[in-house]
Amino acid sequence: MIAFAPSDFRWAIHAPAGLPSFSAVEPAAAVGSPPQRLRPLCISSSAGGRTSPKPSVCTADELHYVPLPNNEWKLALWRYLPSPQRSRRNHPLLLLSGVGTNAIGYDLAPGSSFARYMSHQGFDTWILEVRGAGLSAKISQDEGLQDATQVSAITSQLTEFGHGLGNIIEENQQPISQFTGLQNRFSITVEDFLKQLHLIGKYNWDFDHYLEEDVPTAMDYIRNQCRPKDGKLLAIGHSMGGILLYAMLSQNGSRGKCTELASVITLGSSLDYTTSRSSLKMLLPLVDPAKAVNLPVVPLGALLAAIYPLASRPPYLLSWLNPQVSAQNMMHPEMFERLVLKNFCTIPAKLLSQLSTVFQKGGLRNRSGTFFYKDHLHKSNVPLLALAGDRDLICPPEAVYETVKLIPENLVTYKVFGEPQGPNYAHYDLVGGRMAFYQVYPYIIEFLSRHDRV
Image (cartoon, rainbow, N blue to C red; front, side, top):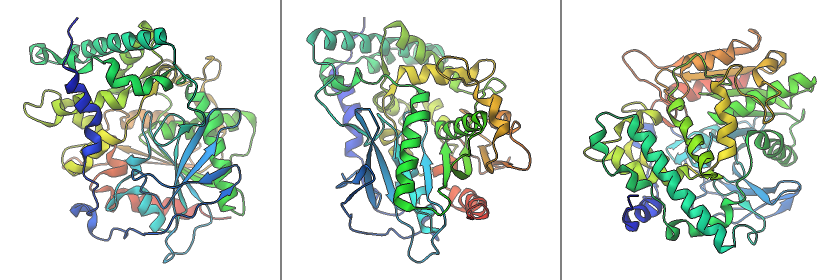
């Protein structure tokens, strides 16, 4: 077994803390971008949740915490108040992020912020951080892995998982000789992860927990705060966030239940990836090493931090990772670095295991395998806009269309962004790419405006 110098991985874990705060506006997005509004945070309590003093990482106007019923987790909601210079919209807007990500992807910097853009357009905008993501937190920190035997076992499993992941990445590269010693960067020491071990034993949820508990709880809270006349919200989901919205529409359709959404937008999302050459297939072995060592989590954020230098610095051994996130020249280097090092979190193995069913016949299914979400999507009556990126390697346009085609034509709009000669859009460019401000955001506003009626 190869051991690496602990200082290497410790640097990778703590490197994000040393990034600049990006107080300056990104030049490419500065023209016409909404000014940053500075408002004091109002601390109050209501509707089972509360606003809280904000840590520096939270750049929203307000930070709200909402406890999950009969659960030890409280969800974080980042709120961006609508601009007083715009007519206030009829419905609040909920933003849902991808798997293992937090709110930062929607708010990279004042001049590169999807959330700020939407609030500037008059939308009361909320980003949900589901349990285990970002600033969401356990109500009680006393429980967890306290036994020394458990700590030792988890540490050993994390180390073994790191070696397995190193093998997966090396097997997908040519020539392999370039990656001698890559496994060293994935070896995980007790010192680096002791601070997380008290939570690892509690990362035992899956996709259906998000669908049936986290998202409905957040929606109820936002409704109570904003009081829309018809009780409905607008919702936008990127990647897994869009999958959650599709699943919600399907589930409500199967039950004959009126969906509490006025309209929905999905960005790079699908319930069925079987017809596409999605690069996500390469990441599916992440689930197998996790099962093999009985590891309850995949520490995606820490692993990306560890390998980022190999993708961003000479000799660019892992440069193939970059287009998974953003197409060439579509994100400012500082924004790209912030996204990679600040946006990703630890993922429960159960969640990855359920999401892997998108590559099986019939697409995504519930945890028991008895309900196929795409089977009931045609019963939805909610207007939907599905956007795809022409260079999205994770969720290619053909995967997006595989879900879109199931929705009644009078309710769905499908659009692929990107041109043969550029600009091109990869997985995160629909949210944070240089050209999104000029091409994608106005298209979204036009759609939401048409369906923001009561």
